[in-house]
Length: 386
Image (tube, rainbow, N blue to C red; front, side, top):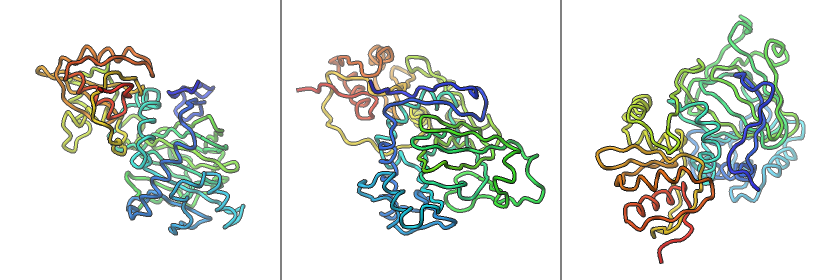
């Protein structure tokens, strides 16, 4: 039976801030992640390249030719793309495809990440003030382009295919006084990143910690941790970068706090709204929390008929808070206001396991809520009105 939620397999490094652990989730495959890459490729070809959605590095050069990108019709697999590149530029040439903002170009990937990774990853590490980026690293290379660097984000780096090392260093005492520092530049620098371009990994590897992960394992590290990757043959990985806007671990995070039935207190919601800043209101804050701060493409338009019977299609909590006879409900990044009369049915959904079905009461308020949850992929319609 295919597993629908991420399961973490503990290792000797579990509990350490920089670690490798095992992971299992049958729905998270190279193919579904690759759909996000292809969506980003299409966006770049269509002219949306201001944020460097796709960056292909060959040797020391960044290539902008659309011809070297994966086929935008999705006819080329990750292995086929890398083989084509190695045939063109040489098997010994370091090659890396980097892609970002994948859920904003593939709704199915967004829904999968919110459902499968929400509780074990996003809730565990807390909500962040900055953005959450979903990135792909595909290729064969001796060091991440740019070399040893650090970012203002915590990372969970899942290896989908192949093997790779991650070399880590903590603090700054190990950095030679003669080393040059460089801050990231360009539109891709959402939050400050710092590089040590003059340092070669072999020169300082003994000052840090080197970990290796294979397919089915993942790295975790805190904001501000110096690191660089090195593949062992071809490797394909997806990274969850949680931007805290601080190099200091623990800063820029807000604890996720919801009851088992999805209820959040007004005090917690107001605190999260204030934490986000930028003019966010309570509805926007609740919507953001329901997707753990992850941004995604708009859901596909579905038939607007009211469902009579639904099935639970997401592990993510359906968040809500009650105020003045109404209830604000949020799921998978969207929120809506409904009559408080829907609460018994909404609360009952929390007791149902993934895939379980239930009837929708006939009253129009509950039918409206069920339609909202189906449209946003928290539930799946099993039977609509005839």
